[in-house]
Every structure is written in C-alpha cells, then in structure tokens.
Image 1 (tube, rainbow, N blue to C red):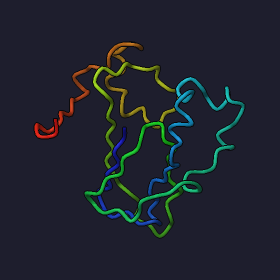
Image 2: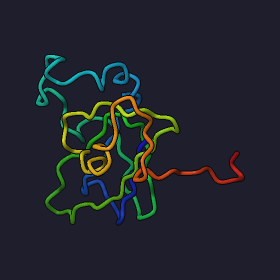
Image 3: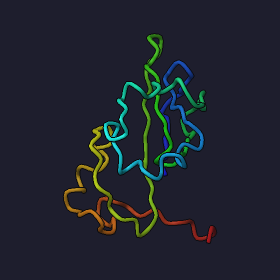
Length: 140
C-alpha cells in the first residue's frame, strides 16, 4: 500500500493524484508480468492521468491518501497558476513479502535503488534500509 502526504495545501489546480477505483483488481493478474508492448498497446493509448478517476483535493498538510500499489493513479500537468506540489510518499508491504523482478519503468527507481542490488528475486524483502512499521500495542 502507498501513502501520499502533501507538505502544503494541494488544490485541484495543483495537480492532485487521481485514482481509478477498483483498478487494482483488474490489473493484479498481469501487472508485473506485462508491458505495454506485450499487451499490444502504447503508453499513448492510456488516458492521461487526471482525465479519469477521482481526486481528493483540496488536501491540507497532514492529510494523507492511501491506495493499493496496483491502483491506477496519476496526476495531470500542473496548472501554470499553481506553485506546484511537494509531497512525501511511503510504501508498505506485509511481513514475509518476496522481492519481485524490478520493473523497467524509472519513476519508482529512487525508492529502491539503494537496497535492491543486495537482494535477489524470490528472497524475503528483509534489509536494513527497509524499516519495520509495528502496530501500536493497543491495536492487537
């Protein structure tokens, strides 16, 4: 799962994230096995982010959106009147998750490039650079 936390107010013209509800169920069977080329489509065939789905703007600092990692999401171009957007993102996966092949796309590379070279596909994702998020004691 992914958390997206804006570090300032994000209005609609600031290019909020758009989410296509339930798309993680449609994509889950082949998302890591397929490429646009193997599906016979090009990136240009996919609707631009922000032209589908829904967003949660306005968002305030401290708000957070959560979505499944396979949920189709994206953002439109930032409006010329906007100051842009700055956000913090965090990815979470369950204890015992296995390392998958690294996808060819570059967008997420900064989130794993410092530790992935120490791992092999099929290994348990356990590395000093992958901190453990523990449940609060009263939530058991």
